[in-house]
Length: 341
View 1 (cartoon, one colour):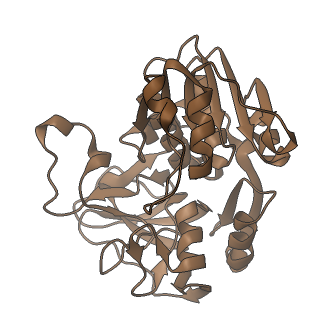
View 2: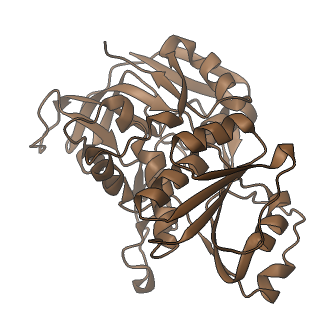
């Protein structure tokens, strides 16, 4: 089978690997679509993602969907041809949640994630024509949801988790700062959850066009001179840019809530944070997701269409071009066709 493998910074290869064989409790999936995420780009560009450092070749990809082709011993209920996506997280052996974090499995101290170099040996991802997956990590796609749409369930789950962290958004006016793929999906998730209005802000007019496609009622083009308002009761910060934090805190109303879903750097960075105190802002983090991937699939099955976030599609043999496009201006979610008709 072919797989998209990063060997080091700037060293991406589409190479042949042995077909996987399902072990006990596993299902082999013929992967059809994969979405490129910021962590995939980080491994390709820098050989690192956060604190994880490449020590060996790694198959990229954790936003994937495909069809079951076979099962290992002890597995029932997964017939060949069943369309599925994957919950990419699995708590590492020995990681136990304290009682105060019951039900928040995204906060395990050690998690094996598809396409991650956090552990050695690394955890290969799903950018391959075939992948053996533990059956408990599979999620069946609802009727009418294609595998291309299924590859969007994981990033939509991230957005839905951020919205859940905000509490009840019904009837509320929302600001989303940053209209990259996650910011645009937060727009869609907030509207789906009943927000009265959603305003998206970004430096890029093309990104804001995608946000409007996903349901933004208003857009603010910060690159063209638009300014953030200063009385937003509920704000989602999705840019992950430390330089934006001061302005976003100023945009949050007194006593308001700011949900940080954009991934901030792990190193020191200057930011103006005074309004956090003087406005008594509640600032909460949103990290990955728990079971919101099932919520995302249910929403898609009920008609939520987020396919407008996809701007480019490439074949697996064009994986290098796909990552370069995802890293450049003018793209939102970039998909790779991994196999299938």
